[in-house]
Length: 143
Image 1 (cartoon, helix red, strand yellow):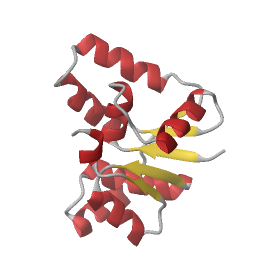
Image 2 (tube, rainbow, N blue to C red):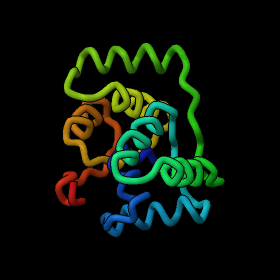
Image 3 (cartoon, rainbow, N blue to C red):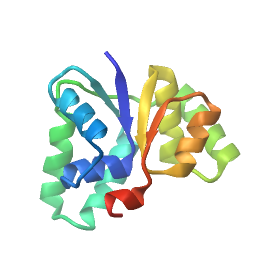
């Protein structure tokens, strides 16, 4: 089963039911249908919460996030020392990506996941590490 890691703005777009590219929406449907796997980790969830709380009431934000976390094909990745040290090193070396994005890179590398992103810096950092991405500028999602 293929692993996917959606960045913050992709998850926000999906939760807010914004129009996303057809190929991304197909992957999202396959995750819901249990044929693809979504990888999440708590700092990413915190970042999604932060973005959503700006536009939705807190209890709805929590419901939406818990619904995604509860999908059968969602895996919550536990962070360990190796991921933390590597993410810290990537963040230090890149400095143009967030710490959450650095964790995304480490997790994608470990679990051979494809990162869906609207962040050009994340895309470029992933390329340096030979991590597959699917990129779309966030402006095209209306952000």
